Length: 443
Image 1 (cartoon, rainbow, N blue to C red):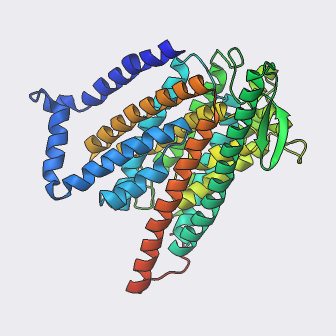
Image 2 (cartoon, helix red, strand yellow; image 1 turned 180 degrees about the vertical axis):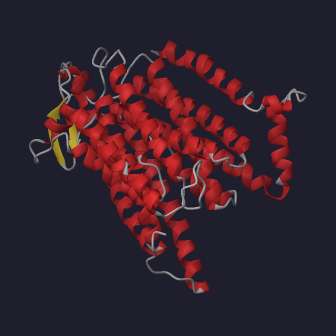
Image 3 (tube, rainbow, N blue to C red; image 1 turned 90 degrees about the vertical axis):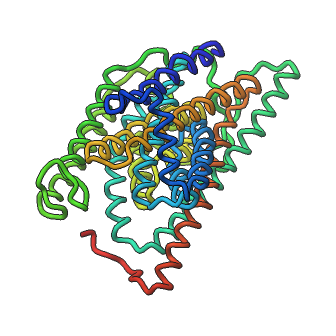
């Protein structure tokens, strides 16, 4: 395991850096050190802001390394850092964040494959990803309609509650792991461990995934369905365009064709979700879903339909708040009893699909400052890989999967403070300038 994690830095990070460096080399073949020159020119062009930009890049590097351990993209940290510290406008910061989250998620998914443990639960990803993408579209509309003060208030309340529940679970996991270690030290055989579900303690599987309890193969059919869903939603987004009229077609924003294309996401999400709900897989393929269902049986009824519902709600909230779904999906999976390691790996996998869709849209719609976005993406890729290796070593050494939950709680707490503060400043600015602060039409 350790040897494979070591080779990850050599065989994944190095080729990624080389490919990122050569991305735009055709236009600058006469410049040998193109990547260094790009960074040098960028800093000199923004000499007045060189210190804030450098500070923002450093903070984003740290944020990416922390976020990767919990399977969270980190957009909730990147956007406030880029806007508050670097002074970028919200639109530019959002586009940069899409590339940065994509870079980090590539590192997380790659590390999961190379480590030899295939901890990704493809059934959960299939159940949640389509509904989450649909929810994001609904949430974006709500973001346009809702006033800024309401969005800020909802964000502060909801994410503060999620942060509290996540941190509570993390502390509970830590206490139970300590108790388990104490029992092992006294010569007891570790056959079972306690898993926290809300405020209850249920006797369940060990928190750490044991050797041989993870899936070694890749379910290519499920992966193909996920890719097909990705391309389907991407095609809808690309044909429809955005509210500014940026599209590869001549469809006018907010007209009949615009809304018809938008509504196609509903059957797409329903068909793909229905397929996985009705598909009869092997018991081994359903491990994590059944684990969540069994864990919740004592407190109420939980079935497979709960996962797409959670994904839709998380997508709506993510669209309203302008953050990725990983920050909201991860605490929900932990609360229903999915193990921390499977939660982190599955969330990273889902974040890759959603963030890469946004990044590809920016590319095809001829986004400006692509070079700068790729530089930040490569930085987050390296930071995420380093963070993952450090956390995996710590888990192997100390036997504490709760470190993943602590990572999730840390990112959520920081995001709550930063985004709430940023939103409060916007609300105050609108108030003192006399701007309209009520509900708006979607178009």
